[in-house]
Image (cartoon, rainbow, N blue to C red; front, side, top):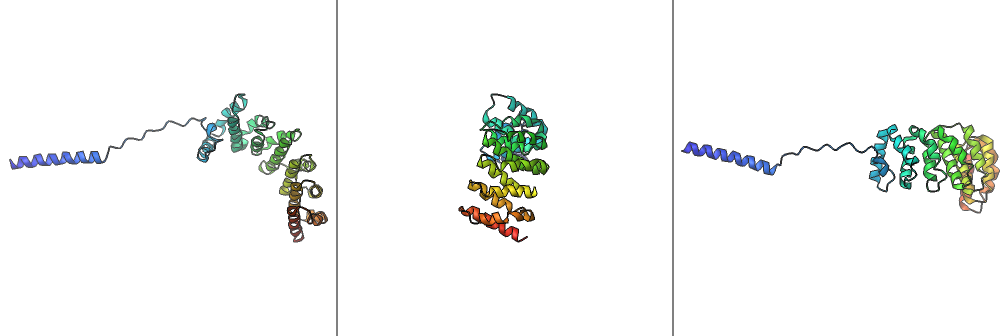
Length: 263
């Protein structure tokens, strides 16, 4: 009887331990494998106010690479596509860069749309040498915003593509005399960034020191300081600009004078 009672007690104890373990430690539920993400999901998130969604969409787009191009083309060709969706496609072209070169004509078509001009120009500045021609053509636009953004993107494309300075500098020099002060400011700014073109570029900047727009004069005063010995002929004009009625123009002219005289 004692042995039988011991066996029963042992079995009861074992059952109790099993019950306790199962209630205290639920059986591990196998993780369900999420189905593959929709390959087109990125376009809904790429132009978004949520940084996390934008980052996730960017990663997905980069992983897709050329496989994202059919949706990009489809978006540009869809007359009913929302502005946000088109902006997402433009941003995607910028992220993909030369990989999206086949979309250059479609991106260029967005330049005249005032709601898309800036995004289209930025995208083209990343898309390789093939983007130079449509950007150059856009400089003939009647819209000063289109001309300004196209010229800015040409300046950026010069280094990114890269482009031959001999193709870019005449466009920037011509931009110094554009009727719009915004275009002129971009032109003198990128002449300083590129700082090539020797006396021809410097002469254009000296002319810009007398521009009626303060932003143009200030940008020109800054740009001249990057030309080194090539800017020696600009020293008298800089000295005059150091007495400009605008304190920022005067300051930038003084800074450039110090740079040139230190060399």
